Each structure stands twice: as structure tokens, then as C-alpha cells.
Length: 424
Image 1 (cartoon, rainbow, N blue to C red):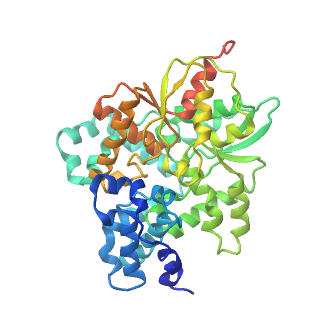
Image 2 (tube, one colour):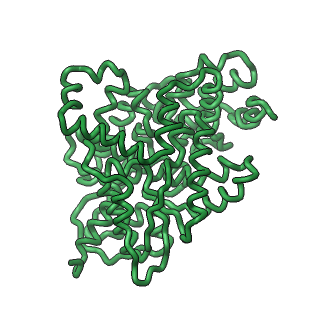
């Protein structure tokens, strides 16, 4: 078996130290510190893995305060995959230091079990309806949790929800569907935003897509992001096994992070002879919803929406999947919508999954830059297509008191379809 140094040797040496990556790095833009750039992080990891001049354990900050947004790679002539390098470094660091009990609980117990996620969300709802969460903020108890306590404010109030089962009941048979889709609903929508899941199903139905909502588990990206690659592989196997029993044309999701990682299952399980071919077949069926709707020919029978709209590109949509035109095509197809492009639209908002819960101050500074760009557009509606981005952007709009609604692209489409003439 090759060592990590041997595995990464060629990739780490691709960096020619030109510094073009600095133009795309959100963290470098707010700190100006070299080691927070892709060039700096790669240099440090090269010293740890290849030259052995540094210990990996001493590089916790460079390894974990990277957003892994992959914007650096778009500016890099040799295409150094910094995000992949950082993920590998996190995996190795986890082996050396061990995983804390909170990660074991989350990645080994909670995420593989949607019912447990639902129960956990009901506890948070109880804290909302009883006022315990508000009391914790007012009394300063949340500050005792450090960055996680500060970032708690970005988690929205938890709605009444029956979880995944309620969303499964929303799916209905169509008379003459053109396509059959498995909706990968993810962890967020069933528990925190069932109305977004309902909008997704209605939008797909309007485009003659019959939807089923299988019992998929978490996509695995959160686990991979913390170096828990074996947990990520276990989750992938569960989803692939379930999908293998379905007769569908496509696995579709409105979450850019999910679609990105689901498409990576082929790479994730490439060295597993039992699962490699199945993973490749599964990944080939995965589509982000904007990509899918444009590919099949978007139904443009919509009502007018008098809105000035701008779009924030989720990193896993723009930088990982290279999907940039499709969301804009959809937004410009909605009657009455005035679309205005935002400066640095594809620069990370600072969400990066749970990044703010461990790097709150950096996350806020990245968000403030994004909010300044939103304000300059004069838009009254900010659209994106990633739950983490939506939470982060909504928090930023609230903090800066901007007169802007934050919506997922499926919500705007759903509103337009429901406004169409003759749509009872």
C-alpha cells in the first residue's frame, strides 16, 4: 500500500507557487495572510508530507479553516485540487489525533439514521417553542459553547414537521410522465424546511416528472469534510444499494452540496471492487435540479413575478460541478423577473456546511463581503440552491437589515408556476 506522501507527492508538487490562486481565495481576501491561501496551505502540507520538516498535528488551522470552496483551482494553471488535498490531510490528521465523541455520534449514529435526525430536530423545536433557545441567548449561555454558540443564530426556527414520511406523502402519480425521478431530499429539508421540499416536488411535477422520495440517508459530504472517509463510504453504499432497487431515469436534488458529492461516489468507491461499478452507475444518474430542468427543456408556462433577483452560486455548484449558466437561464425565464448579476457571485458566502460552528469570525467576515455585494445589486430577492448557503445568507440579510428575501431557486419557480393563468 502506498503511503500518504506517495499518494500526494505528484499532486502537491503541481503547485508552481505563481500565486494566481490568491485572487479566488475568500479567506486570503479577508486576512491577507499567506498560509490561508491555497499556495500557502499546499506549501505547508508539502513540508509535512514530503519534506517531513513539519508535523501534521501542528497544521490544524491551515487544514481546518480552509473553506474547501475550490475557487482557487479555477485560477490555477496546473489545476491543483486543493480541496481534495485538504480532505486527505483531514483524514490523516483524524487518524493521528482520533475523532472526538461528538463526531462519532454525528457521523456513525445520527447521519446514517434519518429517524434519529428527525428526533434531534424535534428537540431543537422544543427549545424554540418553549423559549429555551431565546433564553440561552439572552443569558449568555450560548457563548459558553464558543464558536458553535455564536453560530447557533444562523440555525432557523424549527417548523412543525412530520419529517421524511410527510414529504413522501407529497409525491403523487402523474397521468403521462415523461420522466421518473428519485428525489434525494437530503437531511435539511425534511426537518427544517418541508415547504422547500414541497416546492421541489411541485416544480418537478410541472415539468412532467413523476417523483418518488426514497429513504436515502445523508450524502456523506459532512463526514468527508471532517476526515471521516469510511463513514462517508458507508453512507454512499447505503444510498447506492437503495437506488439499485429503483426504476428511475434520474436522481435529482436541489441541494448543490448533495448533488456534487453524490456525483463523486464513483471516485469515493473507485478502489472497492464490489462497489466501484455500482457507484459509477449511480453517479451517472445524479443531476442538480437546475441542470436537469434545463436539460429536459424547462416548462415556461408561468405567471409574472415582479421581482429584482440576483443569484449566489453555491461553491459545490459552480466550482465543483461547473454549473453556472443553468440557474441563470431558469431565473431569466420567469416572466417579470429582472435579473441582475452580483459582483463575486461565485465567491463563497462563508457557510461551507458547518464551517461557522468552528470558525465563526472568519465565516462572518466572508459573509459581510458577500452582503456588501448583495446590497450593491439593489435586488429585492436573493436566490441560491444550497441549504447551508440559504441559512448563511438569511442570517447575513437579517444582521445587516437588508430589504431582501432569500429563496431557493425551486421556491421562486414554484411561485411562478402557481401564479400561472388557470392554475386554480
